[in-house]
Image 1: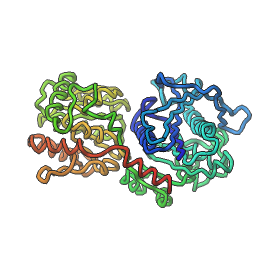
Image 2 (image 1 turned 45 degrees about the horizontal axis):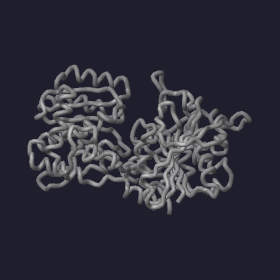
Image 3 (image 1 turned 30 degrees about the horizontal axis):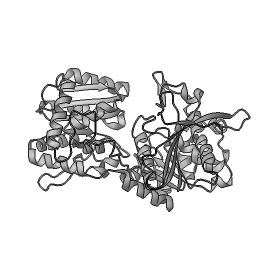
Image 4 (image 1 turned 60 degrees about the vertical axis):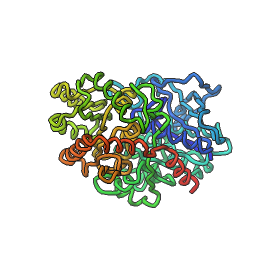
Length: 486
């Protein structure tokens, strides 16, 4: 099949979280299965361009809006990945180059001055530009349009309503990675972005008098997927659907939950060059001990014998960082050490700074988006905490298990689907699950984790089970192929 992926983030080019990882991993897995995949994303000012790239001789002309001057020219930088094409598939990344919209910016969605005020225009250009790229690559047509989150929603809207009959017949999938972000705009966006006004009604783009891009994509696509089965159920319940739960219930017949995978080649403790010692499931105790000593020394936490908890996260209310902050005193009193790594909301950043000062020598904080440090945390920590209030899928817990760090999570969304509650007596499970996102339930899970840490033999077996759990993209990609064919 010819599959067009549209996303504002793709790992290796630009990412701020799990969206980029998911799109990259799924695309590679689909190419391995023999399909032709084209991923379209912007060429941001911060995007590293690989040595093996080629700029198209002729750019593409992208119409966003109805006026004569609403056509923008974008260059196309094509990068081919030949490492995943053994079964006859192809994988290419086409980066849209436009200095005014993308290249002059030092961020994906915003910079130190705040969120960019023209993001809807930037991602409308990406969405329409993706269709133009696909038309150039595949003159005979595309089999599937797969758009990710609100930034790519207009790819489905334009194909269905503005690009002609051939595009309107192309099947489309829209994946909700995080319903908290929906692309809500004023009604002036209809003409400014070239959206037909007859789509502005309560069963499509209209929401409380505004334009809701995510809602429009859900209404017009053939299939809606979420990034875990539990999240697909949660967003249909009041309080979890961000005011669209009724709309997802109406569209439940085309709603499917497919759990994200991870790239197990990239996240592999047997080959990872950035950790103090490489190891596998059989050598996990020795390898993690060496990595733990190195991390404790790096973070100036002093005592490697103590149970070491880590948290690597975007700092937002969704992620429950304040719940973890309120639990730190109890962890420290029980002799634990804690490493906190993340960047985001200024209030939460200040909270973590305060924690490292209040519990100096016991809690270490790094305000950063640092992939190498995150990997050292997974390798060096005994436990990795994911205390989310809601979690569409979550990748951190899967990365942690890959490195033998035991997840402590809340029982929501993808965390429910990927972490099996541990029972050391029976030799089952892969982590510790708080029954709700609250300080009380989180503390109960921490107590279970600390007790398990003392049972060295059983704890090593728990680590081995976690490392051997299959979180690869292979199974998930096959499920997506079934959906495409259906």
